[in-house]
Image (cartoon, rainbow, N blue to C red; front, top):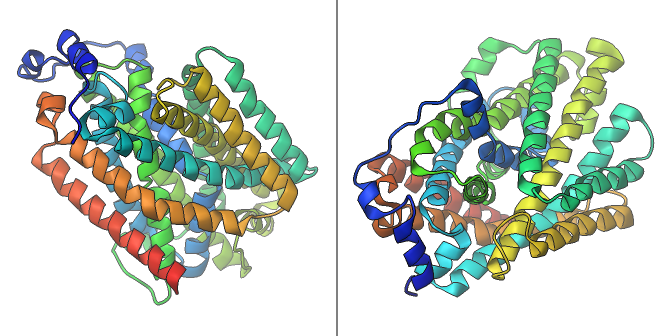
Length: 429
């Protein structure tokens, strides 16, 4: 095991994270309403990343095939996601350097680089799904060719790279987009009028015959360790301190992770209600939007498609930002979103997504399979690294994991391993 870098250790003894200050325990600052709003951001970026076209398509299939019976999966996945995002938040507060750099210092350079390259590989592959989803969504709202809208959306996201404070702009943009998504799916639920009694019954864990693979997919898309890992970078970008921790938990971590969970649950209920009333079938998100018309006419379809557009656009922004930042950090070329290397890799991720989309003009199944296989290898590693680092007393001080953090952390790690084993078995079979 590598020894901590002396420079980083020195930084740790001179700032707000010294061991002496840990012993006093966290205190809370007095804040105004605007002060609380200023703390919102990092967890919403993470939520926007995980709530993309793949998440929505899986939710549509769950509601269409199994009605309300898999709503419970979203609840459990969201709870586990909160705990791992919270660990990442505390790591972002306590570590004097970025998470990957801290892993290099404590566990060895090769471990940190492996984590950074693994996340980058996943974001590279998922960029294609985001590109496809953005084009489909915008074409459903405004008409025209999905390929043209994919290019437009990619250029719009790429324009963010020219700004100096990249992360700050991304944070504000995604907060607005999450609000738009929430309004869109709430409106869709009002139009669809789901059976709320059956939805409540869906909170009781059950496994309908043939639902096993879909449960794995729902857990994989809603309990995103890749996204949780990136939370610490947002905390570091905003220079949050130990005194901010409790307020961050209340106004950012919990609502930022719960919001996409609620929206995913609403999509399942909308799919169950709409397909039950119309008798139609829909295997994809755009197909579901089209069957809204018998219930609410073209406006119902457009409202739902707007949610898809926002989900694809927000996931595209967050995916590129996270992937570029963490590969730059793994290479030792800067851990901030505004670094030259991070911006270069933003462009690489976006360009890769749009080129593959234009070449294949459809859903690139092979790349999605590759992305899943990378997740099988990387997600357990990332979860284990978050868990181990959050338990290091020398690093975390009074913000070290408590017994309840470790209890849910172990449950989460077991869920990740089970997910990985199930996916491996699927690939072998």
